[in-house]
Image (cartoon, rainbow, N blue to C red; front, side, top):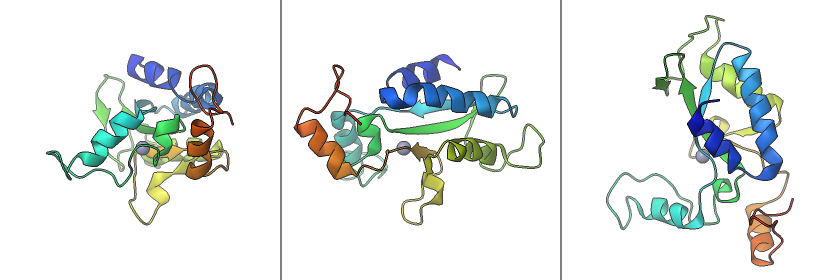
Length: 159
Ligand SMILES: [Zn+2]
């Protein structure tokens, strides 16, 4: 894994860290690699993103305020492709490993195999870079766990 990815994985929810490492190994076994561009996002960072394009300059990017994104609980990741020369790519059509399947689909296959939900499958706010794994709890559950201090020593909600 590249350093950015190692750092992002280290801050994911503890239940997902080793699984994401396994998923990346599975992807690499197909001759494809990824960088995790975003994992845990604090409530403050989420609120700042929500303000962007509304009350602060920049492009409109999200409908989620702090507590309304699985990233806020370390249960979601965003990724891009990582080429052998270290460059990154957001192409959903390239096939660098020449297996007649897009590299992007090689990635989505691996995450789905491990039971993750893919943002590219959504009809509303389709998000091709996003995966989440939420253990069948709702965002409401997650927020009340936080409020009721059902968290581990590092502040991750207990699942
Ligand atoms: Zn995301």
